[in-house]
Length: 379
Image 1 (cartoon, rainbow, N blue to C red):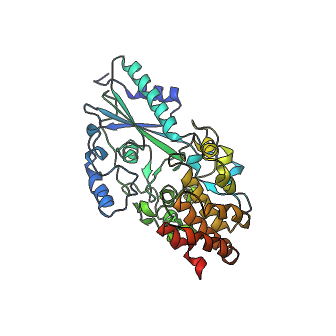
Image 2: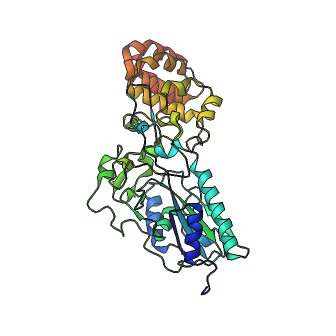
């Protein structure tokens, strides 16, 4: 076996058994070349705050697992095209990012990585150590995926695979097994592999200009982040949100590397009610009922209030008159950000007709930020 615990042929057999089309392996070395890129990202305060802070564990797998020998990277496709991708007409439905319409990818990826671990240990016929890493891990998974040859990082900052474009979830498995192929390590830095050429559609299409330059993201301006951040939506992002309830797919939908072909995945078909959810239903369901509807997806981790707030913004952008009675009740909601955004939405829909209701709410409002959003009703 030339010193390997797992040969490349054996790895390919295991991948075929598990249905893994995208799998690669690289050495467990520290990504020295990524350090200045990451430091600049944090120094310029372009991080969303959801990522792990800068640390050695972002760059070096040994900081996470002493004794690691090999890093395996996988990519699971998730995009399934269907007629439901066409947004319903009317003003009552919002949109949810394609990745959040399926079973929570964290669960699926972890299951696949655990099954991969079991097959590797059985094949090696010896006890082994494994550490599955998904995007909740500090490790920069897309850098290792690119280094493992699964694809190249595009100008959007996303990994682009040959067969499934950017519609993939990434997982990394650390192990103390010596896997053939781990000695070589391809380039991992954004831009070193010119997969985009002259195309810059993702940069020009981004609704908020979050892509400041090729391979340069200001995550705080990304609408995917905005839909997940608690609190009142900053004014500059409200109109760009449109009818987005969770996430944003703009940079993916404009990418020529993506298409709408049907892709068999480990995630199953999208959950129909979450394709384009009923915005008024989001506001009228109980917390328990709403979480039952979305709880199996990756869009549930921030709780129901985020969905309600985003639905309120979407109804305001849609100028949905049908929503006015419900929005007026939300002026007395227990959460100040929902009261504030309801006042904003009522102004967008019909400021004159809704002025009296918002003025009345202003007179009893105790939260300063919510009062600011209601102050328009006084003039």
